[in-house]
Length: 253
Image (cartoon, rainbow, N blue to C red; front, side, top):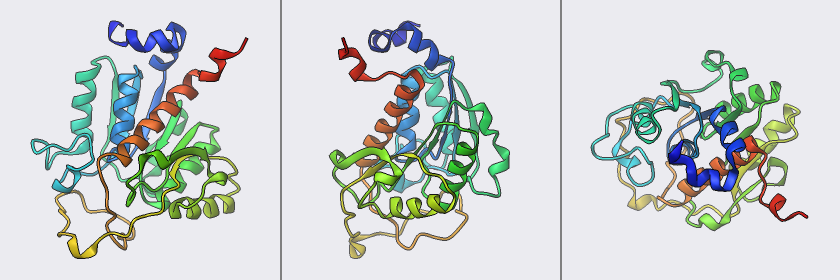
């Protein structure tokens, strides 16, 4: 397809076929996940599942791709589907207005997916996604904490065992070890979290869907550049893994 010609100049026609024939599921399409979806669709992914039960609210406008004044109050997956088809009408979209947790996990058949992307922020949900994906030997990539950070250059790709600084990564390392899961590709930041300025915080807009599970101790600070870069990095890893394309291979004799 002509719209992917520039991408094909790098990856080649055979790899573009692999991308087109792949189905990826993205759990959570907020500040990180919305950019994952955007980059995957613009790369020519043939089928994508998007999972999020939330509606767009005013406080999403500072970082989430689908958040506009014209979309406030709409379900994120509905806005995402419309945008995806505006980019590539041929992309098959399956949307789930679902908050992923152990009690909703059986709705999903993980065997259908060529890649699983975790961009949610609840530990219980993340562990369930990873455990089910690993049980089927499916490639999984998981985003660690992106809140309260301001330096996107501190984002790194690594195995979970090689993470540092990030408190969420520490919790995930411990929990995955208990489950005998030894490997997991993650995107994490080596930047120390910035304490939110509580005295400057305003009341959070709650026009979205009520969340299950334990409430957050404190709403994290966020911005337009760290979550979005994390999402782009994740999308790049997915595309490279699906095609087995590595830049270093170009320079081998």
